[in-house]
Length: 361
Image (cartoon, rainbow, N blue to C red; front, side, top):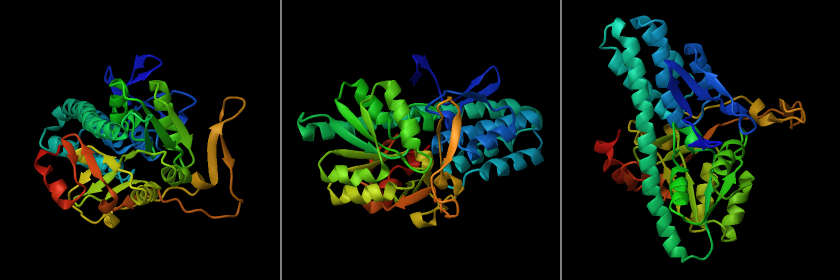
């Protein structure tokens, strides 16, 4: 996608150096950071310089490739694998990418590992772009169905939660890919952007993306979604997911479950967009997914840009009040209208998931 008219990926290779857009500085500054070593890659994932399950997977792949460039021994391969795997427990793409990389590298002599690792990491990144564009094409047909049902009575109002756009993948995005495709197709639409407390990925990232792409949108507080649904101001919900079970339960940013409940109560379609590597075929019950517990300071403090242009943290709670910070929640399959994947739109059910397992990446 483009920033100020220039094409960017969220992570890219240039002259054997790996670069990312540091998302902790968005939306106020586009800061380009190099992943110079394994420590920088693990820091980028853990501290959310990169976010979104697909991008986390691609970054982990490049992180392992960088580690092989530093030391391609069996010991370092195992140590780098473990260090990267420990950075974020919920997003299954992380494990998927690392296992794919290890499966390739373990069978190669150490002298061949650095080049092979970088080639495979680039392949994972390129595949992600193709997967997400396909998700966009299938999701566009979902939006066309809503357009036909609405019969040109105003724009299609889409509500999304957290950030599942191009900055959460290598390019295109998952939940936002259908929106970008719809804009390209000339469909009149508008997006309600949940702020997504406590890290405000919606307000900081999704709104930044949509604004840069010229997509009409409004940022709303997290608790406004149900109210807007009651008033007939939401036609469709599309969100992403960090892990989807073999039975169709989806784990996404905290607050997604409540949006799905409100959508169900108001008869509004609730779709989840995901690449097949985000499916965890080893579990069926979403409550088995490990939920990342992040620092309480993300709840008690907010980051913003001060009057002098610097990034500042401000305490918003009583100094002695404790906080709990669950990063994700689970939406049961029964609340999901359908799963938009790169191989098509399927039912959020064991049967629906089983129908694509052989085609899954």
